[in-house]
Length: 547
Image (cartoon, rainbow, N blue to C red; front, side, top):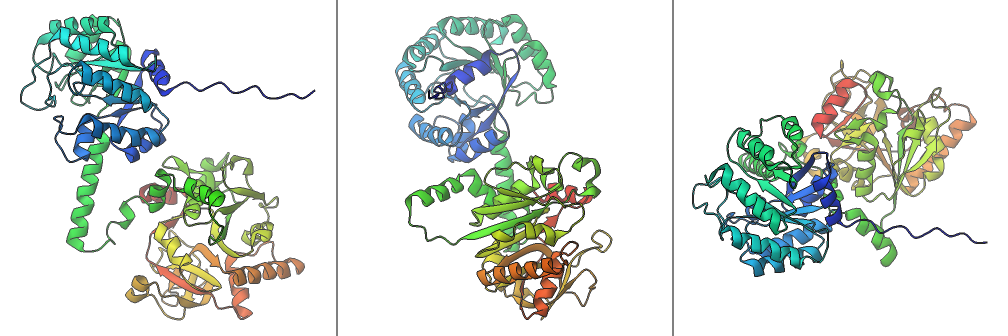
C-alpha cells in the first residue's frame, strides 16, 4: 500500500492574519513603511504588520500629505510593498480618496492586491495632516458611516478590515463627539476605531479607551505622546499601536547627512563605513533568487567560485558567549557572524560555500551552506580544518576565516586581482596591545595612495606574526583567493604535509610560507580598514558599531 502525504492546508490570507492581530488579547505593533524596501526591512525586523503611512508615501513621492498623490499612485506603491513582504499591510487611506464610490473601488483594488486593511479618517477631502494648522473640518457622521458601509459591502475578502479613524479630538470637538462618532462608525461596520490626538500626554486617549469599553478594537498612534510607557496602553486594553512615520524620518536624516558629507569632502572615504553594504541592498531585493532562476533558465556560463570558511574553533576569549555555540555563530545586530560572511560570499558570486565546523558544530544550521566537520578541532589548527575540505579546493576558490566581517568592496578588490594566490592586507598599523598575534605581511613595496586608488597588487615576501613595523607593510585580514592553479598548489601542499605528519598544528601563514619557498608568488592587495575580526568582547563591540 502506498501512503501519500495529505495536501497541506491553505495558509490564512493576510487579511485573516491582520484580523487575528486586531482581535487578539495581546498588544499588536505596526511599523511604518513607505516603499518595497522599507516594508521588507520592517518584516525582517520582526514586526507582524505594516502601516503604509499616507504621510510617508506622499513625502517619499515628493508631494504634500494633502491627497496630492492620487489613490492609483498610492496603490502602485502598495503593490511593490505587498510583493516584497508576507506580513499584513494596513493602508493609511486618508479620507477614502473621495466619496463612497471612490472608496468602494479602492477597497476592491486593495483586496485584489492582498492588502489586509485600510484606515480612513472622518475629515473632508482633501485632508489636512492632523499635526498642521489649517482646516480640520470633520465629515458629516451619516456620510462617513455610509462610506464605511460601502467599503464593507465591496470587500472581496471576508476578513478584510476597515479601521475608522476619529479626528474629533484633533478638530477640538471634544470627547463626547469622539465617542458619538465611534459608536456610529462601529454600527456602520467598522472593524476597529483609531482614536487620534496631538497632545503630548496620553490623558484623552486613555479617557476615550476607558469610556469606549472595548466595544471593538482600539488603535492608537503615539507620535506626540511617545514618552508614555507602552505598558499603560497595554493595561488599558488598547489593541494596536502604530509607529507611524519613523522609518521615513530616519531615512531623511541619514540621506541628508551623507549627501552633505560627500558634497563637503568630494570623496566617499568618510561615509563608506557608515552606510549599508551593497550586499544588504541586494539581499533586500532578492537578488539571489534571480541567480537561482538563472541556473534554471539561462546557459551556464557564469564564473564559478567556491568558498571555504574555517570556523572550527570555539573562541574561548568570548567566554560564556560561546558556551553553546562557536564564535562564528555569535549574534551581531540580529544575525550570526557566519551568516553575514556567507551572504557576502554569495553576493560576490560564490554559490558553493563550505564551512569547516568543529566546536558545537550542531549550532551551525544555515541554509545554502555546506558543512564538514573537523572532529579533531580541539587538538589541531587551521590547516587541519582546511584539509577536511580539500576536495572543495577545485577551480577558483576563496578561503576565509570564520570570524571576519568586511565591506563588499574588499571582496571585490580581491576577486578583481589577477594572480594564482591573492591575499588582502590592511595597510593600517594594528594596535599591538589589542592585536598581539596579528599576521603581518612584508611586500615588495609599501602601500601608497596609488595602490589604494588603483588597486595595484604587490608581491608577498613574508607573512608572519613575528614581523614588526616598519618591516611589515600590512596585516593579512584572513581572506585569500586562489586561481584554479593556486587551488592545485594548495591541495598538493596539504597532501604533502599530511604525508609527513606536519599538518596538525600548522596555520594558514605556515602554508603560504611553504608555497613561497617552493616558488609561488602570492600577490597582495591593500585596503585601509573596512574589516574586522571578532576574537573577544572588544572585537564584538567593534563589530556592532561596524554594522
